[in-house]
Image (tube, rainbow, N blue to C red; front, side, top):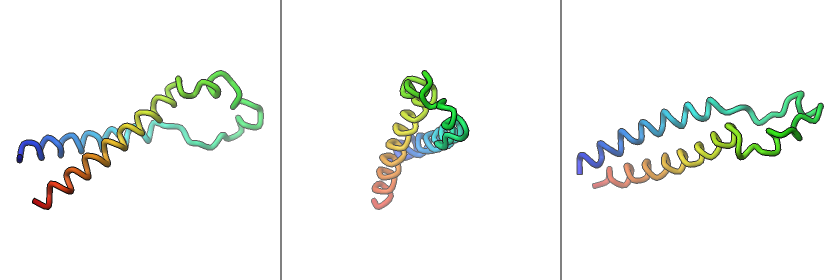
Length: 80
């Protein structure tokens, strides 16, 4: 049981570091001056789900779910 807890703790640390890096890599949600000129309707604006930014958003969601699940499992396991 101790090895499972150790593996989960190491995985939790890796997920925390990856989540921090992925969040810092994302662009801000404010459109800035590009929205005035209509830059939001460009190719990258319409296909945001297929771009690097879209991939980072999807990866963030997956890492957040992993973070919550692993933290809940580690928390429940600490009561025994």
